[in-house]
Image 1 (tube, each protein chain N blue to C red):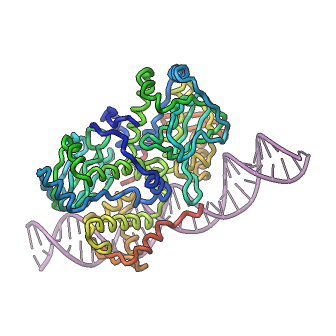
Image 2 (image 1 turned 180 degrees about the vertical axis):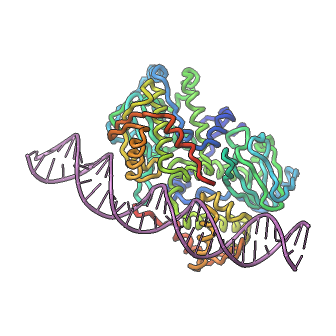
Image 3 (image 1 turned 120 degrees about the vertical axis):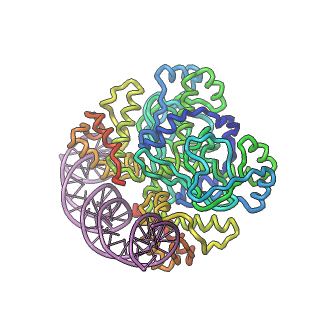
Length: 247
Length: 247
DNA sequence: TTTTGTGGTTGACGTGGATCAACGAGGCCC
DNA sequence: GGGCCTCGTTGATCCACGTCAACCACAAAA
């Protein structure tokens, strides 16, 4: 671990994250363009296929490499002592996974494929060298580091004050944004995770997630058919985010 | 900012924080002994007095120094765009304040004195040099850095699932622990913050905090008289923490 | 074909905590 | 002293979400 904590973080991005305080800011997509992925792939050349429901890595594994997702998607979770599973994030095609161990030698989460997937393996030892060659990679790091900062007690608590529909709206907008980053339509996509996984991620029960989806549908904000989502009104969803408690 | 992210963090402490997931772990006290403070004071010599309700620093201020609290106590908060104030932490005599900007050049919180206080000013430029001389200081850093790691999405969400009484119990135990670290009785102390500030910190309303105190009193766990707290049963409070949702 | 299992939707109900409101105690200033 | 302000306590009410349960769609297996 030779990284310095000297990553320049703009005050603007920090303030945006701190004051807006919605999930969207907390799950900054750190996606790479197809070109960047290909360039990485070319430089490294080591690929790995992971079948649906199989682990890419486990909590406690030594932190030796990061992975650029070439195809498929993953979830990261922690297993709690009482047996519950807490989903900590979703990673999509074109994004980088494995950075959760950025400050320690060991992974702190399990990473599990949501569908058959393929990653490009970037050994940690090669990272610094690669950072110089691949401009995008350095950029990803900045984003991830700045995400670290946002993880503040205050933000935690504000999350707690978000209603179910606010959380789901933030989640959908975040997903939409991340699909867009990959050149897909922002309006229509397939979720690869179950309602239960979304719920675990958002701190809600699966029924609550389902109901929120139904309400969005009633209100004409999205068209939902199981995992297939079509967003009908982005402004409508955004409006939900700024719904302030009376205070 | 020359710090490296190479701070050695024990897997044990990480696991403890991740799996136990209670507020106590999230607000690790990073207190120093009186000797350590005195030693620092001697080495640096710059003191500053802050009157009650006055700022030690504000969000956006350049991050130039950290402060060892010689007397008094502080809260740190962020002001949200809608005018609400979110308390992000409390700092007591013997603890270090100013590290919230550890990864950036600017403070991200306001620091406000809860009572007339005095701090020992440690310019950031002197920090590295001092770290070599004052063993305790390095130790504080490790703790603070490891606290950073705990700020994980998963932990956030778990916090959201804690009941009001769990949160308050965690808070009281944490306070007790921090008082003990300073040589005071763990069982009896004065809180310097209002119910509203506690509530903001814990993500609860002041009435809920008050009611939780009352219930603790009824149940013989603590004796409460306004800000004066006497803890009658530490095991009783701890039992509340492990209260699991049915799941 | 039936059976079994997984994932999604919807309804009924209970409850924790937010909200609104009243009231009491102590500190401060005129 | 009386008025004002802040802080704490307590009661009544409301509502969002968790919980329990029924039911459906779909897929894989027998």
